[in-house]
Length: 602
Ligand SMILES: Nc1ncnc2c1ncn2[C@@H]1O[C@H](COP(=O)(O)OP(=O)(O)OP(=O)(O)O)[C@@H](O)[C@H]1O
Image 1 (cartoon, helix red, strand yellow):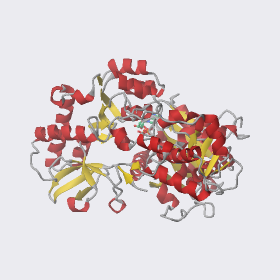
Image 2 (spheres, rainbow, N blue to C red):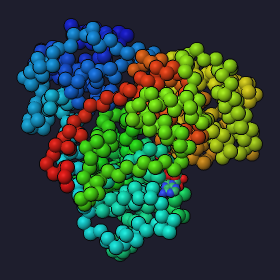
Image 3 (tube, rainbow, N blue to C red):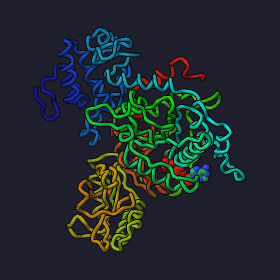
Image 4 (spheres, rainbow, N blue to C red):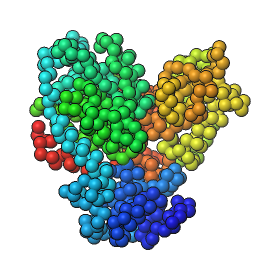
């Protein structure tokens, strides 16, 4: 068996065709062949199912729904093809008929059914979808635990809760009502989801939930046992920082947020420290940025929670999904979590934007609604929004005055602050504008656009030397450096201080060059990397309409990174494709929850 140019030489017949088309890659085929050999399975349809289930997982799907495999397979793209904007040609491939394929899978020794004992088969076919056993078990675990966690949390002091909810009275604002409902549910229910776009008051609401939980603890004479967590170090740091800002308003300090991995004590090659046999010792666990939590992490989190711990999940289900398989926030939201009492659902939606200029939130809404005409109409006629309806690869940066000006102004402001050693001013100037690309490489990618922006900005700011540590150099951390308090995705600027050249990072600390190994120069970044950050102005480079990376959540995430201004470069056809393409992440979670007796109608 050998691999040449990503082609698996031993892949026979159908598998070879799917491999050549770029749909299946070496790990998918090798794993499928290995498990088939172990079980003595030779049916090519079973092998193809197994290999595609592996592939689906790498594309973020928890299972392979056999009747929708064609739709899902649009997203099974080799990374190099995706970056080059090449979509797979699905029609030319020898797809088995769905009925025949399902029969072959049901009869295969590789595949168990819904009632098969755990771990007896490597795969499982349930509701016409093929799962890898481990992911089926995670999905079942989530379903079972969530079902047991619906409804009211016992022992809530209703009178104290009413007092906690009495903020803003006198200048009461109807828009606060959703936030009040969120706090009421978070305190009164075992499980709550609070969702909303950027600036809808999610963090404000978290701090109010913490204050209300503290009121409950004080009333019962017990200490407050609360944990705050997020899926990434950067998101955890950002949450801690925002809560600190709110602390004055609500009295007392919120506990520092940590990563979910750290909270659970996730260890390589061993079960996490906290799990079914050793539960987390909290009355409440609040998880922010839930849209980035995978199926597997969600299963581990729920398994570590006892019935006496409330869970509050906060996030924006319309944002890009996690790197690993699953889209649990969107799935649970779609299933409609039951709340603590009739008329009070477990999912609370915050839909008033407090931070955006209304133009950007209108565009975000049109994208979220999947309305390409309205999106294009708003892009053309909204203040502080620019739409360059053209192929971005043909754009002349020098001749595009508004973008050129934005880049030059940013370089001058960043460099001036850097030379004067003003760390905060330098990082602020860096955040005044961000160039975002959907692709990493190629004519629409970060490498091309970052290089063009670098040439322009360095020339404008007079940074012509060849050394890496020049004033104003924008930085991006590419790894978590917990000992330095730096998270993967943190940005910064090289500045001159009386202690020499240092990196002023977005965590408000400065570091000497020699301690920072895993940082890159950042003149542009991918939309994925930008998730969880906001900038005053954003320029988004869209690829051509045939790019398999163009999806609604990508465009929504990019546009909602901007606080005040958005510029989009790309043809209208690409906007249309993005708005109308929902990224497909197959999962059975919504269906299993919705179907469970007692889920709805509680
Ligand atoms: N009820 C309210 N009345 C007035 N201002 C509010 C209210 N809720 C939030 N804000 C303000 O709106 C801004 C955004 O709030 P917040 O940071 O809580 O939103 P968010 O949803 O967490 O945003 P992001 O997703 O970007 O983190 C803040 O300046 C906050 O003070």
